[in-house]
Image 1 (cartoon, rainbow, N blue to C red):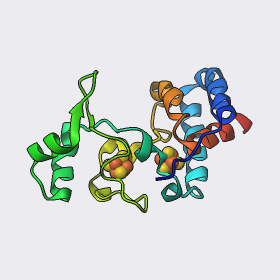
Image 2 (spheres, rainbow, N blue to C red; image 1 turned 60 degrees about the horizontal axis):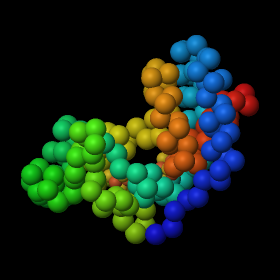
Image 3 (spheres, helix red, strand yellow; image 1 turned 180 degrees about the vertical axis):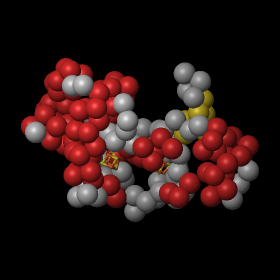
Image 4 (cartoon, rainbow, N blue to C red; image 1 turned 30 degrees about the vertical axis):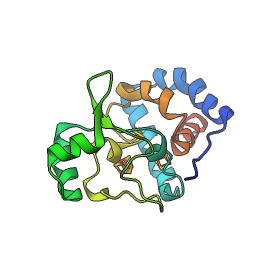
Length: 156
Ligand code: SF4
Ligand code: SF4
């Protein structure tokens, strides 16, 4: 399965932008991310990428599990024993990457019931973006759209 390489210089630009993003007032930061996120994702085709599903696991909350199990037509306990493990922080994550729900065509087998963390990824359209700026460091290595979003903000 092809992965989407992130050029090192592209990621570095996102990391270099962090002090500027941190300096923006909360409401201004949220608005800037919202506008840039909408502009990028109106054009970006995630099905041509799926790098998040190929290289990282979402945190799977208790609230996600019943819907996931239903979508797979298995019990919650079988979902946990078959697909999930607990990481060093005590969070449930998928046992393997690429995600076992990712199909050959980059579609998610449980798309309508995917975990909340998948729905929100790359966490660039939220209230209080200040609270998630620390996620830019890991996610700038995974998500090409996130790097483009940050560049739009810096250049605007
Ligand atoms: S959210 Fe980012 S990493 Fe995931 S498929 Fe879309 S562009 Fe790729
Ligand atoms: S559950 Fe679906 S959206 Fe979430 S990582 Fe797996 S394939 Fe991607």
